[in-house]
Length: 274
Image (tube, rainbow, N blue to C red; front, side):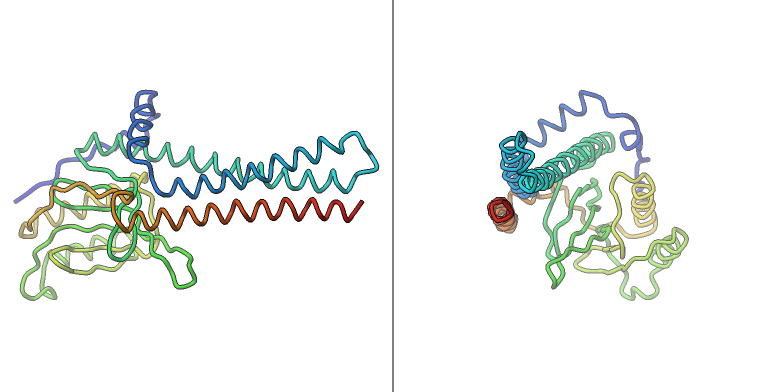
């Protein structure tokens, strides 16, 4: 029977070293994510609001009778600063997450991609093991253009002729019930796919233990299937990824133009209030 090596979970909870941060920075520069385009758009919107707002405040600060313009400038600058601060916090959290998952992947012999593509959506924070198991956070677009996040795990698996009498699946379902995870199991194209109804965090030790347990059950009870040694495909290197990047760039440009329109509108409102 095959066996799965024990997990080294230390990188998920130990403090990040400066060496790990630098390594993550080099990795990030080599694999710039399309999602960064949206962050650039938010930065443009933040600066477009902040700079005019501060200029308005500075221009009318010495004129007590221009109180409406001071209020307008302060509101515009506050909105811009909030966008910049929010972007900074999100980027810092993303960098820490990527650095931890890179260290976790290196310690356990996994491949890591910040984002990859599947037929049913994109997967973020993707980890792939040597047995072909791949897991991450599946992001599915909804009809109202919102996004729903699910935990996802796919493992190469060759089921018996009658999956209903498969003892491996029975043990797997019992384990999932014991853990209390609400999920859907599907067999498709030689892969057993497990999709959680809710999202999960790849930094969560409990999530990584659960994935390890599922891989162990399949490795010790099931017939081995052909595992893929390929690394996850970074979303930026695919045609669909490039389309996504262009779409997110349009979102960023739209946010920037909206910020410009808001700045002009507030300036006009200030002139009317004088």
